[in-house]
Amino acid sequence: MGCGSSTAATNKSLESKKLVMIIGGGYCGVKLAKTLDTKANVLLVEKKDHFFHCIGSLRGAVQPDFAASCVVPYSNLLTHGTVLQATVQEVQERLAIMSDGRKMPFDVCVCATGFSGGSAFWSGNDAAITGDEKLEKLKEVHDGVTAAKTVLIIGGGAVGIEMAGELLDASGCEAKITLITSGDKLMNLPGVQAKLQDKLADQLTKRGVELIFGERVESGIDMTNGGMHPASTVYTSSGKTISADVVFVATGPKPVLPEKHPFKLNDQGRILVEKTLQCSGTASQFFALGDCAATGDVLNAYHGAAQAAHLAKNIVKFCENGPSATLAPYKGTGVAFIVPIGKKGGAGQLPIGVVGSTITSAAKGKGLFADQFWKDMGFKEGRKGAESGVLRTSSRDSMGSGRLQKRMSAILDVDEKTLLEEYGSLD
Image 1: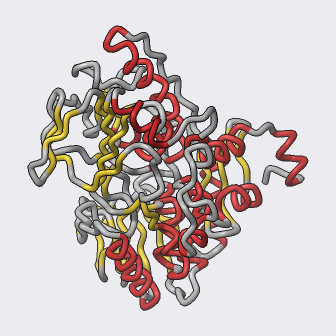
Image 2: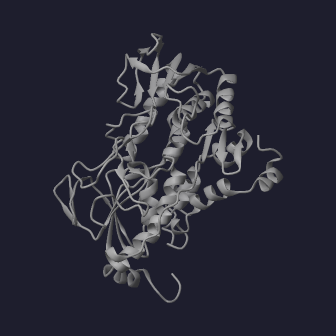
Image 3: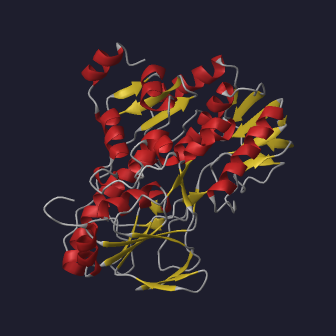
């Protein structure tokens, strides 16, 4: 720990600090909890017994040997704070009530509950609470696509694109893949450059994926139930009929919130927040970030981690000074994506412009950050180290330093000259 301090001494000093309850143990909740671990009395509430590495999960769904990399224990996450496996049913002004009736007081409450659906291979109603249950879900997907002759992916965002890429790379999967989207381009989002959209479409088409643009699925499947569906025939807005042995609905995430809460929502069901990431129209001790919050950011892990790093500073100020604290506005990070198509393909949009498959593969596609995230969760040697019994890291060595966030920042913020020197071309 340094300076003659000890874990016991630190724990004792933290007992007198404000209790910060973080609801949700996804990318944002984990980053925020780890950053605050030595600065506040942290309670992270999460219904699952594991962190699920969504970034790698599409590969885990089609490559069984990769699946276990996506299920990470919370056991090494916090050195001083607590991870509580529970479901928050109701949020009151100073109290959260769990589904089992337990009442947990707080001084600061952060909603980081994320989303359901839009995952491409399981429903928003997925009840996989344990890591073993999640791995079984991934195996079901693998078995389904291996047996399929035709696969339909509904949704032209990053999840649908990456799912197609993983299927193309998957051993034993020889299915004809069709991707349908209601947009006239892939990644049809504000701020996304046409060059990125075209690169992704060209790569998929060259690898045999049939792309159907400007068509909305009207019937034949439950579009509210994101995930893998069995053999189905769907009908589009123009009257097209498409049949497939397996259908994946990946049309976008839907926010998840406690059943009862004080938050004001926008028309997409996301929590309205101020520039400080405080919840609009509620008491000042409420904050929100990530996919459940209307921050204006792109919905991905990189932007969520940037919000968490900013919010941690504001929460420290709030804990020290109360409602009168002057909190800094979150200014956002701009639109940035890295969208792999399997291990070797894909494209990305960085602040310097659009990059091609070589940089995308090196930055993300090869390993999807899986081993790095195990290290960020407190396992010094990654997943292999966890399996061999590596001890808890110190707070100095773990995600308080934000390895994954630093790596992503290095990729997204690097200058064009450096990239050209490293790779020879942005394409």
